[in-house]
Figure: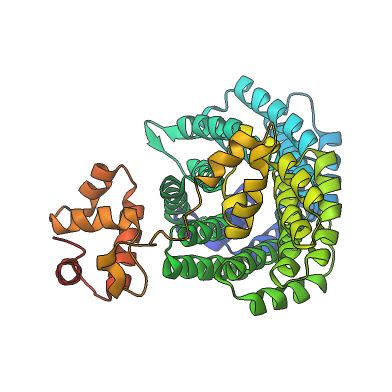
Length: 487
């Protein structure tokens, strides 16, 4: 963008390739209207000057840009139609353009819920890209493949793919922005596996890479998962701040699909906070929303949780029945595990103990190989009670016992006694950072000492200041010692 801004507008307008790239830069940095306008003007001018030596090629790439934007917005049918139009006109030697076209086609299928086909497409694309010598750019396709494996419930395989993407997404030993999405995917996986400090570290790293690159798409989901991760660690204020940022970025991006997704994340946080009223209002608004081309399984699963929280388990079970059937048939195992888990709670509340235990057993069998935990632990005592019924059922008994160990006993204090004066206690990680602050370590050294990213250190420091109601390191250490948190 800096390079483009140094050029006179007349020069950019005279060079179709520059106009194409200018539109792409505008789009990924959040200037959607400018990007679409640039694309329309480019197509119009080339249509008026078909003798330009690169006119046909640039117009095909412009169509691919439109397809890519449609896929991001969830307009999967339009995206697929545009891609197939391009593929029909490509020469056999145009491998790079073919790879990009197929990736958009795979993304469209993924948005529509066809994860098996998306898996096949992206696996083939990665092979083609490696053969074409794409090098570090393969990392972006690996991130797509990791997301597909997350939806398929194959979390451990997704971790391996993310680690490969991080290794490939470096140039001259320095990571590029492409590793951001691998870190965000790892954060999502580690949250599901209840590895909360590690999840927060990866989410913070991913967000830092995106923000440094001024890339806006992906930031909203990263902050939303970060909000749930912080709340699970007892950081209510940090969770609220992250969710506010997720909603703000989604609204600024003006992509309805992402705005709707962020509203569902916010509804989940409200449910976790016990704020049933706002969650119920979200459910009413969502039910009135217009249907789209893309699958809204996360939103639909969230909608199934609301009546359960309202004390209407039969409505919850009814909503989840369709998801259990569709997700199971299509190989979307992550959604199937969640739907079975919530439906088990609903059936238990309805007095259908046998059905509840069947659902739970099935969910446990599917969840154990991938290490799912939060999908159970997030439901608190009611799920702990239901898990105890699975202890006598093979082959789910061992995993049920392992999950029960993740629940905090009702008699256990949520924080050490010296923190009782705080409105919200410091987490274990924040206590470690606070100890390093007291030793006078710079933030960079704290990160090295605790093996966390610098943005994560800064985030923990802000949270510590907020909880101690101070504005500096010196004041934080002094107040912590006054409260007996530090010796």
